[in-house]
Length: 85
Image 1 (cartoon, rainbow, N blue to C red):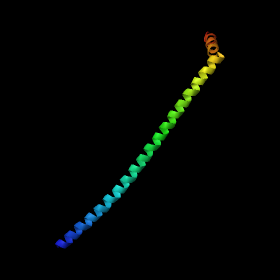
Image 2 (image 1 turned 60 degrees about the horizontal axis):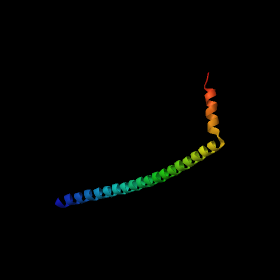
Image 3 (image 1 turned 180 degrees about the horizontal axis):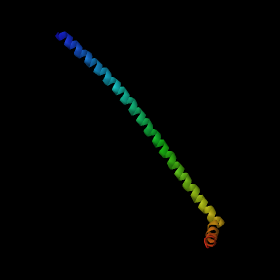
Image 4 (image 1 turned 180 degrees about the vertical axis):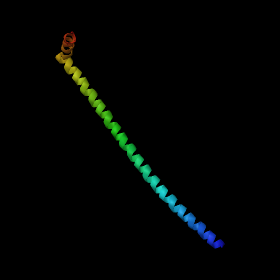
C-alpha cells in the first residue's frame, strides 16, 4: 500500500514538473516577444525623431525662402485687406 502511494505521489510530481516546464517555456517565449516589441518601439521612436528633425529643417528652409522672397510681408499686407467687411 505504501509503495502504491509513493508511486502515485511520484506520478503527480512528474506531471507537475512537466506542467511547470511547459509554463516556463511559454514564459520564455513571452519574454522574447516583449523584448522584440520593445526593440521595435525603440526603432520607431528613432524614426520619429529623425522625421521631426527633417521636418524642422524643412520648416527652417521654408521660413528663409519666404523671407528672401518677401512673401511673408506680402501675405500679411494682403490679409489686412481680406478681413475687412
